[in-house]
Amino acid sequence: MSILISGSLLSEDNRVLRLVTKKTLENGYGSKIFESIKYHLIVGETDFMVPHEANIAKCNLEALSYRPFPVLCVMGNHSKNYDISNMKEKDIGIGETVYQIKDKPFVAYLKRGKMYYIDGYKFLVLGGEPSFRLKNQKPRITWTEQEKAELSNLLEKNFEFDFVLSQIGPYNVNSKTYDLLASDKERDEVAFFNDKINAKIKFRHWLCSHYFRDEFLSEGEKAYHYLIENTRVIDRINGRVVLHRENEVITK
Image 1 (cartoon, helix red, strand yellow):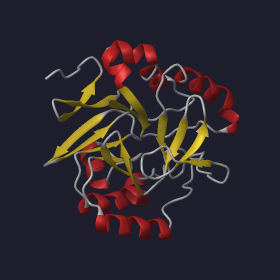
Image 2: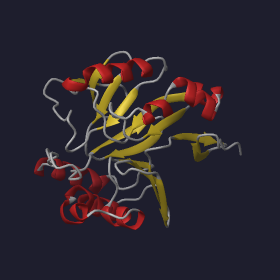
Image 3: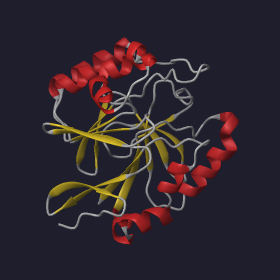
């Protein structure tokens, strides 16, 4: 079995949707790997529940429904859909419950600051980022003190993971990879918070999105993947964990 990873999937930009359709995935990875995908994890922002974009989001969901695997999203900080009051919690057998918003295709949001076991891998799931790129964009819900305390308790007992999922990476890594805006440097509290988490834990790969081009950085045993224009498939080959790229499937 394998896991598909992709970046932001927003209604106003269908580039990522084209990356994750059944046809594109079969062409890029081959039918054998496509048929092995058990989950699709979205590490970028989504807007499946935004009322004024409901028709476009509905089309996105319809396109995803042609694939046989569920979609699990990372919950963002300022995301337009960060209202869990009407969400249904469901246990799908990956450790913690998820917030389900759709039956077909199955779409749910992973909880922020929780640990999940997905397809035999250990995931730490973090949140999203405040964004100040647009004048009308304001930070919304950031980490609460209760969430921080619960995460701190979790990391006291569990500090080794296979993968970390978030919408934005640690600030120190972001700044090495991108030319950050002044607003990011001054106010990106979630990225600074991720710095503290990054220093405390061990992991193989940190998977995130948020910025507008793909990047990769390796520091020691830790690797950081920023995805927006490409996807990855987590797979095992002869007991070794690999991340396939489109049209570059590893065979050994």
